[in-house]
Image 1 (tube, helix red, strand yellow):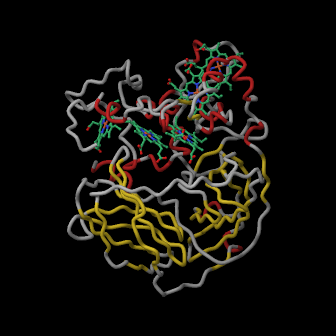
Image 2: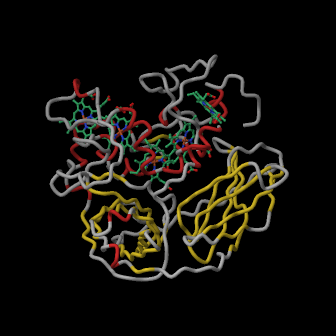
Image 3: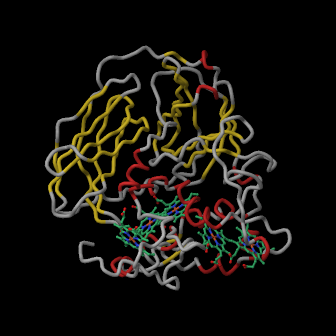
Length: 402
Ligand code: HEC
Ligand code: HEC
Ligand code: HEC
Ligand code: HEC
Ligand code: HEC
């Protein structure tokens, strides 16, 4: 758990942000479907896979939308998902997708990108992914923000969910009147000992606490720091893990309205920020076109399967990426403490029946050890409807507590 926590706490230096207004830039939209084969083609040959899902209760959204290529097809070069008008250029992602759909999204942009074009990927209420090219202004054209010295105001602080999912979690929420990062310090007797830090800049804060024991009382404080360094620590509050309660899932009304986004750009000293405002709540991710400086680590995609494929079949993504990596691109919140560990080997004494649970080639847990990729009759598309059985199949001697 420590290691996972540390992983999570490592600041994702890319996120940060700012306020006010400036210039409005041209955004050329193009759909990412342009260069990939029509999905009907996949289903023509893989008929069974496509038809098998028709009568299932829970069909994974990208499968339903026939975004087969997004998960399965390897880009010809370095990074994950290739896009482009004519299949030439690829995106190197600078950020993970934001965890929630929001009208207003803030990012800290490396100043070296000023004056360049970046790629913005947005998922709106229609759940269709759109990509657009955004021309960033030169650094000095971005509006300079004057420093503020007043600390941010915290309101609406509370816990809106205590839940036993894969892990026992409690969700702390609060609002601030300006964008800040989000930190929660918590512990059993005092709001200390444990902390979760989310460097993303937002006014609507949501921090999921893990590393909790059932049947205890916890104390916590929320801390918000703005881009000028002003910091507010909330008064301490408490919650208990004796009773579980959930926030009802609000289904956002779907819309077919096309996503439109406008950008405004700001600078504070030598830092550069972008604020994207959309016509509907969107989940955003930013990237650059490959070959355009910025060294994002890239792994060669080795399919290992290509041998079996018929000639002319598009190359497949490697199985490690398919079974976990691609999932993070749309479910960033499952990285780190918020999900069961993946990419780990069974510990000594744990025997995993690989007929019941899919493991990677070298015997590691993947997302697919517990989930069905396309569709299932089980909620969350887990492989067994009985969660206890699911866990106990591997954790033979988990005593109660689940
Ligand atoms: C012309 C027919 C054809 C088309 C079109 C086609 N495939 Fe395939 N695909 C095959 C054949 C044949 C195989 C190898 C046999 C097998 O494993 O089913 C294969 C293998 C695969 C595999 C590996 C299967 C496994 O068992 O590991 C995946 C994944 C796959 N294709 C995905 C796709 C996707 C996604 C598309 C659309 C972008 C697509 N295919 C388009 C014929 C096709
Ligand atoms: C969210 C990602 C995702 C999407 C979208 C997706 N798949 Fe898959 N698919 C997977 C994963 C994960 C596996 C399991 C891979 C493994 O066994 O290593 C898989 C397995 C497969 C296989 C081989 C195993 C089987 O069930 O026969 C085929 C063929 C396949 N998918 C075709 C498709 C087609 C066609 C589409 C589009 C209609 C599609 N997939 C959409 C993730 C995806
Ligand atoms: C292209 C984006 C995309 C990718 C890639 C993706 N997902 Fe999803 N996934 C979604 C969306 C959209 C939903 C629906 C979320 C919602 O309704 O809030 C979803 C829902 C889920 C759910 C909840 C149950 C359900 O079916 O609604 C699970 C579990 C899940 N995904 C697992 C995975 C795993 C495991 C992978 C990797 C193989 C993966 N996802 C890859 C977009 C994606
Ligand atoms: C050890 C089993 C296991 C593994 C491994 C696992 N999950 Fe899950 N996942 C579950 C279970 C069980 C649930 C249902 C959680 C609940 O009951 O709240 C779930 C729920 C989810 C959800 C829906 C969460 C929500 O609240 O909407 C997503 C998305 C998801 N998993 C994605 C992933 C991804 C991505 C991976 C790999 C990084 C992964 N899971 C690995 C067991 C697992
Ligand atoms: C496919 C086998 C498998 C399944 C199914 C499985 N686990 Fe695990 N689990 C593992 C492995 C492997 C580890 C890592 C072993 C270790 O502790 O080093 C692990 C570790 C954990 C940990 C310790 C996490 C940490 O950070 O130390 C928890 C808690 C846990 N599992 C809970 C669950 C729950 C709850 C379920 C059911 C939803 C579940 N597991 C299902 C294989 C599994």
